[in-house]
Structure formats: structure tokens, C-alpha cells
Image (tube, rainbow, N blue to C red; front, top):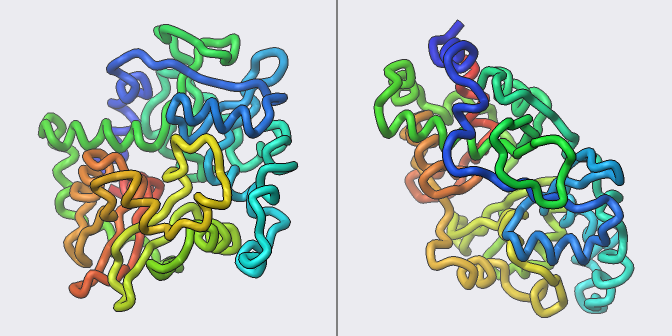
Length: 310
């Protein structure tokens, strides 16, 4: 067994990962209309929302990927560009109960006393991004389960590990600086789109390719941006004007630091990737060649999976 894996299995608890400011669990009833849920997510700047039953139990999560897939369902959007109308999205797409979007993100509960290694296996083996933790010290529940629950996400784990790397408080993590992660991650199809593409075309391609993120390239194939479902965070209404905007313009208007997180091929150690994911608060790092053309993408799940053999 690798030293890092053994450390996660024996020395770190889920409670350790969640230490810090108290958390609030926001949730909506399953009967909430999607339009209302969008407004709620926009108000609280959420990328995912737990959906509860009438008795208060959490049924699962709905995130921005589920919402994008719902909008794309039944619409061959790119072929309809000339005749597309805002009403294609406004009704009935947003007038369905949020529970109808459940299924992709099941509810996984874990005790706060469980070891971090168990949580990582949940994330990697079940391909989920967040789990509900039974937390004895939760301060406030907002329209949530009757149990004291908080969410622990893959990002929480990454930030915890990055903080340990930065403080150099755990010598067992020194190995993370020696392993080149892009050599451990298998090849996968990269989905990119030209910078001239509209948000509508981006959404359509993401639906067809079943991906949650794609790269935006210039005419030379150089990576100049990315679009992810999480970039819709804070948007309470999707209309024609928004979807006909160039995706690269949408990204740049949202953030002054819109450049994607990149590392050069062969130089992406596990440590470098963990710290970049945590410091930039992003969900992926792009690996590029010397010409800054994308060759691989490393996600939060990839980063966590790499620790299982260390």
C-alpha cells in the first residue's frame, strides 16, 4: 500500500477535511419548479442543490450539468439556430419540478468520523462529486433534511490536501512533488470549440458529447479559454440574448481572470496540480504542449484517483 493512501486511510477523517468555518446546507423541495430553483441557486451562487422529499430526506443533487442536459433534451439546437426562439427554453422547460432532473447525482451519506480514504473511494469509484456528511456541529439548516447534514465535495478534499502541502506539515505528501500526474492519467477525448462559437453552440456540443467542460481555441488551435457548466453559476435566467453571445466573450465578461488553468506537458506533478486546483478554485487543469495547444485535461476526480496508488 502506498504511503499517501495509507495516511488517508488511517490518519485523516472526513471531519478533518470539513474543519473551518461552519457550513450551511441549502436545499429545495422536489416540487420546486426549475425556474424557482435557478433563481435560488443564483441567489446563493450554488452550482449544485440538494433536493429533498416531503419528509425532509435528501433525494439527490441537481447541478448545472443536469440543467444544461435538460435544456438540450429534445432540441437539436445547432440545426435550429435560424429559427430558435427564447420560448423554446422558457416553457415548458423551466416549468418542470426540480425532482424530474434527479438521477445523475445520487445521495451518498458518510459519517464525519469516517476516514478520508473511504470518502475518496466514494468519489472515484461511484463517479460522484459530493457527499452528505452527518455533522454534529452544523450551525444552521436551510430548507434541508431533518438530519444534521453538510456537503463535502471533491473540491473540499483538494483544498485540504493543498493546505497540507503548502504548510509542509505532512512529510508523507512529499511524494506528490515527484510524480508527474499527466503520465498517470489515461488518454481521453478532448472536446474543443472555436472562439467564434456562441454559447448556444457550446451548450449543444456539451450535450451531444456528454461532457461538463470544453476548451475554447483560437484559429491556430491554441487554448485561450474554457467553458464549463459551473460557469452558469449566478445566472437566474437563460434567454436568446445570452445564448447567442460568443462563449469567449461570456467567459471574459464574467471574470477578469478568464484564462484556463494550464500546466505544460511533462511538468505537471501531483503537487502542482493539487495546488493549482485549490488556489485558483477550479475543477480542472489543462495540460498543453510547447505551443500551448491542449493535449490532456486533468479533473478533480483524476487528481484524487492519482493518490490511490501513491
